[in-house]
Amino acid sequence: MFIGEYQHTLDPKNRVIMPAKFREELGDRFVMTKGLDNCLFVYSLREWSIVEEKLKNLPMTNKDARAFVRFFFAGANEGEIDKQGRTLIPTGLKQYANIDKDVVIIGVSTRIEIWSADQWNKFNDDANISYEDVAEKMSQLGI
Image (tube, helix red, strand yellow):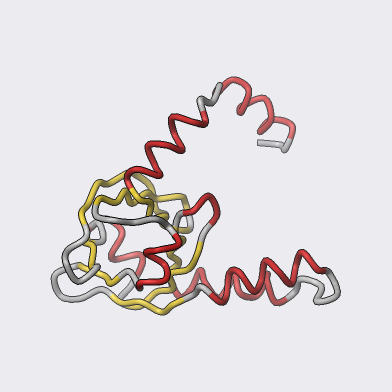
């Protein structure tokens, strides 16, 4: 399970250090793709196969399902972690997530999210979330 929030910086070659606590569960190879809210999603190969299976089972006749599957798979890249614990963020994904230099890497249970530090701060500021309201909505979902 991935949990926690970590601040890192891209090096000049667009590599970022993956938090040590994430590396073992993530494995040497993984999938990085466009996520929601302009962040990147990172999945272990095991978890990616579960997500892939769910997406393959969406009805091809549904326009929204086709659009989402295209979005998710077209942005996907297989990545790896080097001996120094770094991974490359491909240019297209870097641009999609508005990543310049400073990044925030968060654990979200079965996936990792990589955010531009500016986008992460904006998301948290703009959300101005009332956690009581969120909790009420979650209880309606059975959580």
